[in-house]
Length: 369
Ligand SMILES: Cc1ncc(COP(=O)(O)O)c(C=O)c1O
Image (cartoon, rainbow, N blue to C red):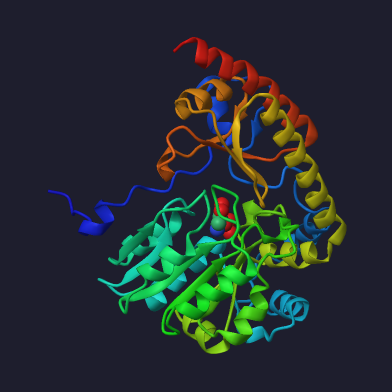
């Protein structure tokens, strides 16, 4: 008999990523252009400054990267007005979710999270033989009152994705502040702000301010979304120096590659790319909303770079038909939303193509019922 995994590992449903373009091409034998609107990447691509920095750094890849990410840490800490020892870098922010779990969560502990929130929180808790405590969303939004009630002395970590993936909704400053006050300080509160650079609302939590008052917060950010560097895998966590010192102990050496460090440093200086990405996203969302309204298609207004739609049909059918037309989006059945799909906001051209195909497909599927 071959070795069997621990019980909790056996019970994990593996993370299902958005389908890569080349996989869809191979599977369906598609010849033309394929559009991927499945993983909330930046449709404008990476910053040109980042690409230039990678080219320059290429001749040094015989050397190990700076394990402490000194230059990137210095640049970010200046930008955020914190000290460098408040930062931890990960191979994507998912890496930091794993670090937090390894640092704070022991077998049998509880980890509180929303039902339809980033699925890695559940997986990470199970990896540690802990118990994920799942709280349903309310109106597609984190129900902070119920989450606070779910916290017990056994709760070691609480996750809040803000804005939330896959729904795009957010909790505001006052709501979050009240929640944090109601949770014991011994519990780590993770504020996952992977999409916060897209925010336009003025009541979005001022999490850096909250961090000054509450040393049990860790804020997560990523270079995978608005910075357009998902392929490089860099995320970072911000927290109290003592908390960060503990989390740093479980990080493996050299987890941020030399090319990634160079590119992220340059991307932080590319304010124009950031602004442009934000504008294209806002305009794209407005366009999609108007079109969805014309189609009487249910959607959830989003604070991120993606929109959740609910055609009230089998989402896999819609997904497969769109894929055949060269458009990859994301069914969210694995989030317990069997008729909903998540669409990343694309460029103007991509959004138009998506809407055109979606109109035809929804008609086809409804007719076939
Ligand atoms: C809410 C949220 N957190 C974290 C991540 C992971 O991002 P990264 O690429 O930095 O690992 C994602 C990715 O989709 C996300 O939606």
